[in-house]
Amino acid sequence: MFLNTIQPSVGSFHVKRRVGRGIGSGLGKTCGRGHKGQKSRAGGFHKVGFEGGQMPLQRRLPKRGFKPISSLKTAVITLSDLNKVSGKEVDILTLKQNGLLNSGVNSVKVVATGSIAKALTVHSDIKVTKGAQAAIAAVGGVVELS
Image (cartoon, rainbow, N blue to C red; front, top):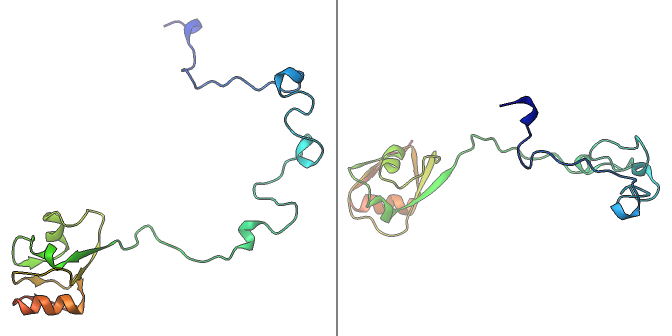
């Protein structure tokens, strides 16, 4: 490699826009700045969001809400999904191992959709609706309450 052969990679170098070079360039006379006003003049720019002294949008809108990154991601599991669980114990870890939950889920709720055929013990880290709790109890299962 020689110093006189070094070039920037293709597409990384943009040709500088030459303004004020005549009507044929498309950027002659006013140089793409339009006529009059603060933005047409040299040094006539202002901060982002400035609306000419009017109360800017980011200050007009109310401050509300905050959603932390670590917010709970809740999954819904049906009674028929619980039939696919191998073993008698059901908690979040066993549901993930059986492929019923994604890795990002950290809260689960069992709803009374479908039917359950085997007796299971549902641990207290899983929320259960009243209908689902009755269906689990009907087949001899246990729902631990926290």
